[in-house]
Every structure is written in C-alpha cells, then in structure tokens.
Length: 439
Ligand code: ASP
Image 1 (cartoon, rainbow, N blue to C red):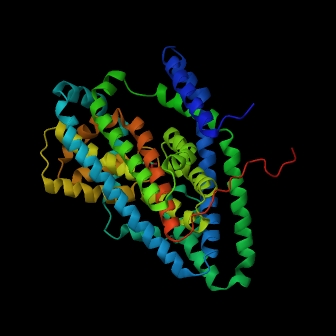
Image 2 (image 1 turned 45 degrees about the horizontal axis):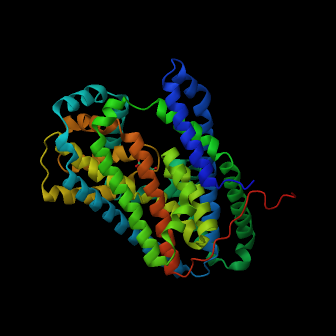
Image 3 (image 1 turned 180 degrees about the vertical axis):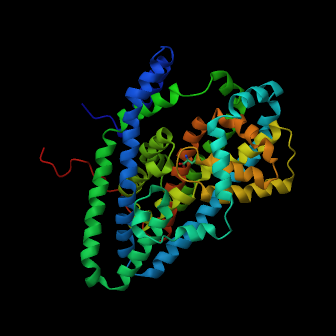
C-alpha cells in the first residue's frame, strides 16, 4: 500500500484529536483524562522539537556562513532579509487595519457581552499576567533591544531557548571568524559542525515520525481546555476578520513566491504544509523552526547559506500574522469600548505593531503581551486594559494557532525570495529518515 503523505497523516491526527477532545468534554472525567494521559504526549513532542532548535541553529548557521567564502555576500543576505521582513510586516498590519475598519466587528458587540466577557476574564490570571509581562518589557530604553542581542556568556545563551537572538549573534561572530582564519585552519571545526548539522536534521526526521500522534494529543488538549462556546460565538465577527486577514496574507505569499521565484505557489504551500500544520498545533514558531528549516532546505531547495540565517532570525523577529492580529485587536477593542481612534492613532498602531512583532517571543500567546504595548501607544486608558484584553481572551488560542501558520509561512516565503535574489534557490533534495538503513 502506498504510504499516505506526511501532511495527510498529520491532518488526520489533528481531526481525530479534535473529535476525541469534543467527545471527552461530554464525560465527567474527560478533561482530567486528557490532561493527565493524552496531553503529555503532545508536550513531549514540543519539547523534543525545542530540544534540537539551538543545536540546529548553531550547526546550520556555522555551516551556512563558512560555506560563503566571502563576507560581503553575508551582508547582502542580511540587509535583504531585514528589508523584506519589514515590508511584509507593514503590509500585514495594513491589511489588518483596512479590514477591521471596513468590517467594524467591535461596533456590533452589545454592552451585555462586554460585561459578560469582563466578568469572566478581567481578573483571570492569564490576562493579568500578560499585562504584568508587558510592563516589564516596556520599562526599557530604545537601544535595549540591541543591547539584549549581545550575550556576555556564550554558554548561558546557548542554554536558554528564549535567547535565540543571542545565539544567532554568537554563531555569526564565530562563523565570520572561521572565514577569516582561512579554510585550512577552520576545517576541523567546520567538519564538526557539518556533521552535527546532518545529525540534527536526522533527529528532525525521527521526531516527525511521531507528529501525527503528537498533534492528536495537542489538539485534544486544546479542545478540552477551550472557552464557553457562547462566548466564542459572540466574538465570531472579530475572529473572522483576523482569519480573513491571515488568509489574505497566505494569498500574498503565494503571489510573492510566484512573481519573485517563478515557482508554483501551490507546490510551495504543499511542501510547507507539515510545518504549517505543526505551527497550528503547537502555536509556536520557535518549536516549529526545526521542521521549517528541514522543509525549506530539503523540500524546497533553498541553500543553507540563506535558510540558516533567514529562518532563525525570522522566527524571532518576523511575525506577520501576529502583527496583523495586533492591529485588528487594538482597533476592535477600541470600537467595542467606545474609544475613538484618529488616523494618526492608526499610523501609530502600524509602527508599534511592527516593533511589537519584532519584540514578541515565538511562543504561544506572546502576541497578546505585545498587544498591551500597542494599546498603550495609542493612549488607551490603563485602567481599562484588563477589560480590553478580557474581550478577546476567549478566542486568543485559536487565533494564535492561525497566526502562527502565517508567521512560519512568511519566514519561508522570504527565505525563498532572498535565496532566489542571490542565486541560491536550487532543486529539492529530499532525505528520508531510513536512507542509510539496510532494508
Ligand atoms: N504564537 C506566535 C508564534 O509563535 C506568537 C503570537 O502571535 O503569540 O509565532
């Protein structure tokens, strides 16, 4: 029998997980059963992916840079990457703002619903912790972001998943210095990282063998802990605006792929689908990063010289889905609470959502923390922040899942565009997990 393609296997796992989760909400012990016996499988899977993220970034970035031969190429790739990331993010926020102004989802919300959502969530630990986290991040100077990028201890950076930019900084520094000492002297280190890179990519293959089961567990967990369906329904129009915006972003990426790389956009989406499905199931672009890298390099054909830099940087600073959502959410909350926004306020949203998406961590729910900062930038009353967040909290998880798909697809699109522009987009070279085993 022909083996079902990976994305179908994952999709089936997801659907069964959703059905199972729903079934379990009808039994008294269902929720506990899922959280005690099913969800841990999903958590282990996410941990495995995070486990290999840093070794993969280091090994592939060292390999990518030391293959370059010429440092000026690296500057070229770096500048293009950052430039395109900023353009796509501003585009995403603009789409979000246009849609939310046209469709006005906040004006249809009744006072009763506002009250009900406020009563349910305004004092919720989830909401208060997001506001506290935002104020911690906000009390920093304008250059803090750059200062934070430079580690003072390489091993401390390498041992913290939250310090991805520090790891990238250290690795680029290492890679460039390897180029400068000349090929012969750098060879032992290069061989070591080359081999490590192969091994870690093999680990991705092995972890992915369990993906269909893991997404079952992850989605069953999401369903049993989701909010009251009535509340979800009240927020339907808002959620639809966000989802419509995100869908338009996927169309936009398709157009970019076809115009700038001359590849078929449907082929691109199909190659990326396992990473997209994992982004949806885990809500974390950082956890999805190893799979994104594997898909982009082996299944699309982007050279490591480009992908090893563009993708890890993208996972941390390029979040088109998140910034689109922040634009929509900020205007929605203002509409629902009767806080008037001027055109200048909306421009402020574009700027702060751009900065906020750079500053958002690539983990579940991070976008909502930065939303607090976006709201404060337009003078939203501080005492109403908890009410504002309470309004959108019920649908945050499903929307987080959807926006993470866009975040990951955006990084992949940009990596293809940059690769094409520097002549580094080749043919796919798919490797199977058992290529070197005797059959
Ligand atoms: N979960 C998103 C990501 O990891 C970030 C967010 O929008 O909350 O890309």
